[in-house]
Length: 224
Ligand SMILES: Cc1ncc(CN)c(N)n1
Image 1: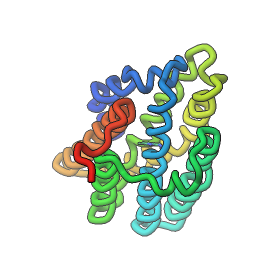
Image 2: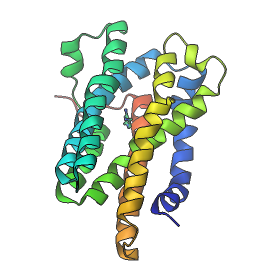
Image 3: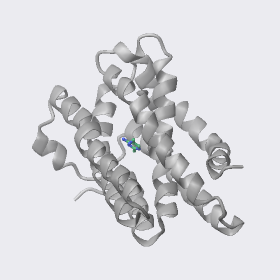
Image 4: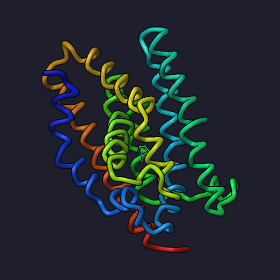
């Protein structure tokens, strides 16, 4: 069994909770409160800055030129295409570029980004991939599922979001990461596979927490 098949199976109980979360369902059926989406967009913008840094670290840790180039391409796609979606939404939502960039990270955003960056900085390329994989893979799955809801891709607010994440180009990013991790772990020990599994499940849990944080618009409990 390939590692990706095992990870997919193990993560299902967590991923299913993300799929059925009211935030995700609300994007699909168009009922999500726009204030919750605004909160999500600002926090996600911050998250994507650190997510992009992981691709820079992937390029650094790559074992050959082709892998280096693909990580560099994913860095570019995140900064210039995925984050362009957020910049365009911010404009429509009346959030200035300055406001967007000055967003303060919520506890879950900070915990998730810090965990991923820590794994990527101190770990191997395999660990970096295990940490980053639920991001593109689970968003692609969510995008595809939501696109099956009639009208989801045409919704005045959430249509563009669904359209981006269900796109085959976005799916290719996830597939490339999956194939690379499968190749790199062909002869890994059970001990190493278990470590990678734990990382993958941890970022899968953070993905769920990110939806929930956005739904609750959860900031720090204490204010200055
Ligand atoms: C929290 C989160 N996870 C994943 C993705 C998809 N890159 C995202 N935009 N935000």
